[in-house]
Amino acid sequence: MVMITDLPFDLEKKILALVPKESRPQWQTTCKRWYALRQDLLAKKHLAQTGREFILLLNTSVFSTTINLQGVHNNVDPAMEFGGKLGSLQDSNDLQIDGIFYCKGLVLCTMVGKQRLLVCNPSNRETRYVKPRSNGSCEYALGYKGSKSSCVNSYKILRYCRYFDMQMRRTVSEFELYDFMSDSWRVLDVDEHDAYISARGVSVKGNTYWVAKRYGNQFILSFDFTREKFGFLPLPYESAGPGVSVDYGHKDTAVLSVVRDEQLSVLHQYLHLFSFEMKIWVSNMIGTKKVSWGQFLVVDVVLLNVVSFVVDEEHKVAVCCSTDKDDGDEEGTSIFVIGENIQRHVYDEEVTIDGSWPHLMNYVPSPVHVVRKSTRKSKRKRIARRHQPEEGTSARSVEETKVTPKAKPKAYRSF
Image (cartoon, rainbow, N blue to C red; front, side, top):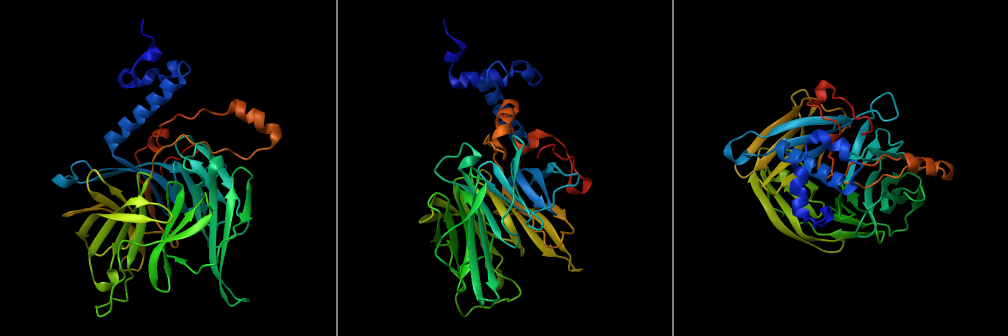
């Protein structure tokens, strides 16, 4: 006699895919593994129907978005759809966010004023506030130690500040690490270096990478959260040589992105050379000491000021988020789909709040827990009442809404 548990995994998936969506509450407690598998199948089916899922920071608010790229090479216009918005959590007013950083299922949000940080998992709606030891203009990054991350206790937050000290009359760099387990910050003892970060950081396999400059040269600055050490990697292009026409009104564009949480991608344009050529590379191998590159895309595009991008390997295109000023010198945000013989405009925001830089990034749901701070006395009660997250659910499937930022989208209850 064949037991249910003896069924092949592929057959299990086929059977669960036929279960009506409405019947899930009745069998949720019957088998947690089946319930989690069913949730994952529903999430993948939903994303396949609606398109790639992204997180977009726009005018101090964070949105879940999808862009359907089916038929983009057959003159079918890409469709962009806004989902839920990260709204009020414990406060009556919406959170004002000026920076986001993604690392394997978790999103680190920096608030306007940098008075507190928020770490959250959009898929299971768990959140945690973290208070910096001091405010100010700093770079924050989220990473984890080791090759695997199953809970937030393996994650750490890096705080990187670089400023000119008037008393010492020199540039000073400060580094601190926040440990979720001990709920504390500590000063990181690293060798002093004068690298200037010129683009947002990204996380690959738990480590962080930035585009940085030193003595006029660009390179990739890396931080290994396991060894707690910085490293330097070469970019896949060289600086422009002498003897060329230079437009000093525009700077080179160099932006990083992540492919499948495993590879690093670089977008570059020689804007100061009057060049419209855009090149994108994807790493073949990446670490904090070595990197090798493969060329992904080379296109000529109208001048863009790309501040973030993501690549779609299946359709051989890049989704680029850019900013530009209109005739009235007001900053606006645009989103394009760029590919070979393709430049499709999919979104426009006429006015961008001053000092708020938009940020588009990939999002992959993860069941990782964000353990909240608590006293020993209340720990048992919290464990007993803890909500079991639905594995595989996406940020969009938490609460479905078809809205745009201007329509004031309905806020998530917990994300």
